[in-house]
Picture 1 (cartoon, rainbow, N blue to C red):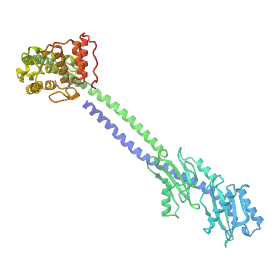
Picture 2: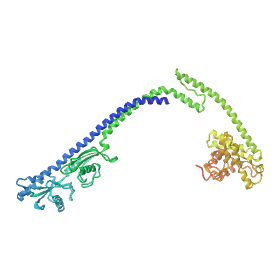
Picture 3: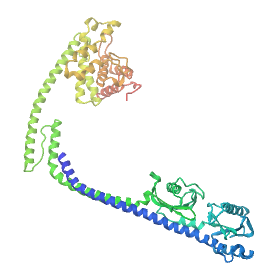
Picture 4: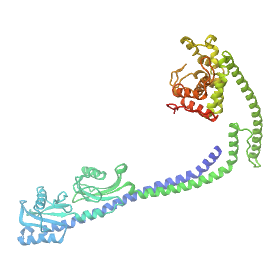
Amino acid sequence: MRLFKAILLLMSVAAIVPTMMVGYLSVTHTRELLVRDAQELAQERVKQLRLKAENFLDEPAQLVMGLARVPGGFFELPRDAQRSHLAAVLTQRAEVLAITAFGANKQRLPGLQAFAVHDVSPSAVAEHEERARALLDTDPTDLRLSDVVMPAGGGGPVVTLAFPVGEPIQGYIAADITLSNLRQMLAQERVGSTGFAYLADRHGHLITGGGDLGRVGDDVSKRSPVAHLLKQLAGSPDTELFHVGNFGEGRDAVVAAYTVLPEAGWAIVSEQPVEHAYRQVETMERRILLGLGGALGVALALAAVFSRTLTRPLKGFIAGALELAHGKFGVEVDIRQKNELGELAQTFNYMSKQLMAYDLENRGLYESLEKGYLETIVALANSIDSKDAYTRGHSQRVGDVAVEIGREMSLTERELRQLQYGGILHDIGKIGIVESILCKQSRLTDQEMAIMREHPSIGDAIIGPVSFLGAVRACVRHHHERWDGTGYPDRMKGEDIPLLARIVACADTFDACTSTRPYQKAMPLEKAMEILDNLSGAQLDPRVVLALRRVLGQKGVRLEGHRLPVKLAS
């Protein structure tokens, strides 16, 4: 497998590295071009919008300012001629909503006020005059524009302009100009699929535009392009500003361009989300990546085919070696090539057969040795049972029952063998108990019981030095621990008690109930299981008790009237 990976990696690197280098250079160069094109497009768009906005504002403003160029002077004409000129301005340009003449003292001249509509509310007239007087209070020497407002009577946004007439000043003209057409133009301006354009004044307030920016006069100074513009204006207010680039971060990032209308001081801004403005960049990158992926796929496929052709015979050796490692001796590999690999296969097969022969011989020796161990263990157990005629054969029976329970609980063969040894040796520590206590026919005193309870620790100490019985020590030491933690010698509780010890404890209790003792007669199986059910969850593991019940059921033992344990272990 390593050889396969090495060949595959070598061929992949040889194909991928130059492809990636070409792809990287192509992506980098093309990305720069596309980004620059996107920004140039935004720049050109805002230039066009500036020209349109200037035309929308300049044409009606120039018509109104034409009153200052009337032959003979506007304020020198008869009153009827003055009214005719005012009416002519309103008639020629629908954008002019109202026009008012003021004297040199900045007071409105009677009869020289005209509106594009007949029914004008007093509040609209008052607003118009208020905006005009605010401009006149600044002593204009040239054309001045007010902030854009939304009239109380409705309609589109309106700007008021005022300028002096005559030299020296003979009076002033003020007019309201609607920006409805400008608003419609900006609303219809398409900036990609999600972008928009808008106008903002020198204070960062919205004039008009597309997008969901709010109403006229709302503060848009926090938007990244406008904030950048205001900062530039604060540093150089008289410089003609133009800028294009990326603004904002994260999801709010936009590609924007802005410029300033010099006469009005308004900013016209074009915004488009970065992800949409640079969509061509992403499309290009995606195509290049797909191309790289296709090239990589072809390279990997060819490398895999070539590498597999070289390394396929090695898989047979690896599989055979793994089976040998798992003890399956005699396995052969089927490689019929007439080369060094074929000779290696023949040698491998010969080695496998020899190992199988050695394994059979060793198994026989091991079984003989294990049989000797078991006979020694049984002899040790019999030496205990021989002290008390009532317990003769008890250890062997406990071992047999424990193995049946373990098999029902799906334990491994190794664990079943440990259960067999543990059941036989569980009472080995009774060798260290004096016979006067061990064989006493009457009830033990508390002191005698304390001595008797030392036999698990004694047994643990006896078999401790025997290495092959290391896994059995838990059965010997802990077979008198209780599920509720009140047992001995270590007062272990529940799942903390080793499973093998819990199984031996159940088998020990079962045999004690079903065999004759000095203090009781052998019980029927149904009565014995009733007692074990009562001990389930207190002294014995409920799962082990249920496993014993299933063992008896499989042997055809019919148990009636038993009750289930109160609580089962998880």
